[in-house]
Length: 207
Image (cartoon, rainbow, N blue to C red):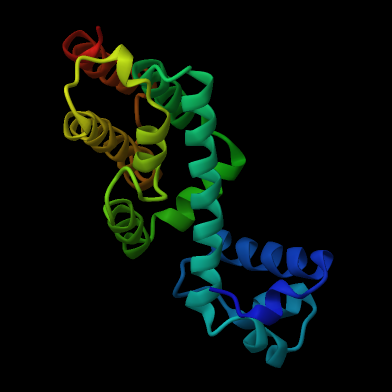
């Protein structure tokens, strides 16, 4: 993650560096991305770069983490907008993931997240700690889901339901962000399949 000197930079300079770095990683694989290109576009000396970041991987992971935190913000927004209805929330998430797939921003994020080790890191991070305590999408869901709407007897059963949806959404993430860059995907067919899975869960768990 960035060094303290990076956070002390003026906003304009910090944003310029990040814009240059993100553009470089969007246009190239991690291996092909060049620190020289980043510092040239950001108009900073090479020595300054190493005052802000340890190396290329450090700034790359910072970009990944920024996008990840933005995604977590969407999760919180969707579950709040659903008034704690986990199944309404599930459909909102699926609709967002499928529709956002065509946006210019997400197209760029595809190239970032298609790095296999990045995908592994995200999946691993979501599994850390107790779900009700972790700062993850699962933890956010646990916090805001209205358990009174569900046929669950305890927190373990709620976490089991959350884990089922996590598996479904990770599968969709893989299809869109990993497979989607090489294979034509039928978004409406995928939506219908997942909606059917959600309907099955709703029949089982909703009061």
